[in-house]
Each structure stands twice: as structure tokens, then as C-alpha cells.
Image (cartoon, rainbow, N blue to C red; front, side, top):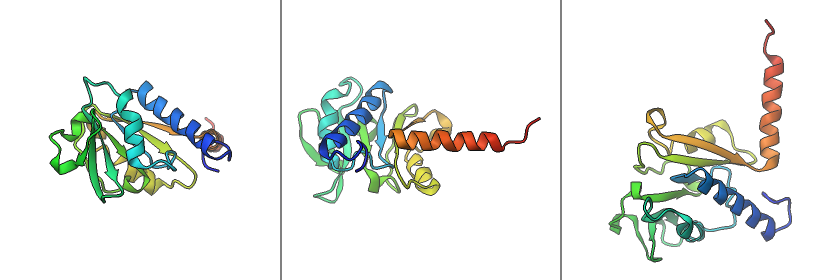
Length: 171
């Protein structure tokens, strides 16, 4: 089972809550779910969970890919869902949720100092991670990323880092 140790929906809910808590703690503008940690929830469900927790002075809505309609949509603060092109809310005034299939190719103009949380999961290769990070178009000019993964992914990263350090020549 993904995320919560194989105990089904309860484990997934714990992972979702942990990811969304990190989004809030880091004052993120976007969630880039490259590692599919929000798997099991539709993008609209994620948007509806997020909207009441976001700072209303900063975010007028949540942008997400509407799977049932096949296009990007905006969920506003009163719960209306509208096609992105029909919304008066611009991308930089929304929190953007990139579900796993939209971590490549989707383009939003976010604030120049926007922060995104990128999730890591089993099987995320360098190319996929770089494509996901590329959703932030101004990384070299003020935008930044945080990374989050489940405990097993974090342990693998730390283990790999330790091996790399041991292979470095000693001076």
C-alpha cells in the first residue's frame, strides 16, 4: 500500500493530511505531486480540502485539473468550479495543485517568490523530478521548492547520501 503502511484508506488519509500540513507550514503556493502521495483523491477533492485552510488574503481560489471535464479549473472560495479560461481569478492569485499526471508540461504564472512542495514517491526518476520542478518557471529568480516523501523514501535518500559521502576521496 502506498503511503501509510498498507492499511488502506486510513493510511492514505494520514499521508494526505501530512502533505497538506506541510503545504500550510511552508506557506506554499503550489503542491506538485510528482510522487503521487495524494493518490486516491481526485484533484477536485484536494482542492476542496485545501480551500478552507488557505489564507484568504493571499489566495482567491485553487487551480487544479478537472479530470471529469478534461481541462484546468479554478475552485473559488464560495465553492464554484469554473474553467480556468472563464475565471476572473488569475493563476498567481490561486494555489495550484499539480496532480501526478500534470507534473509535466502544465504551465502557470505564479508569483515571483512562489514556494512549492514537491512530493517524492517510489520510482520517481531524475527526469520526472526535473519535469516536476520545472513547473516553477522562475526557480533561479526567486521561486523555491521543498521536498517531501514518506519515511521509506526519506530513508532511501539519506542512505544514498551516506553512500555518496563514503565514496568521496579523503583529503
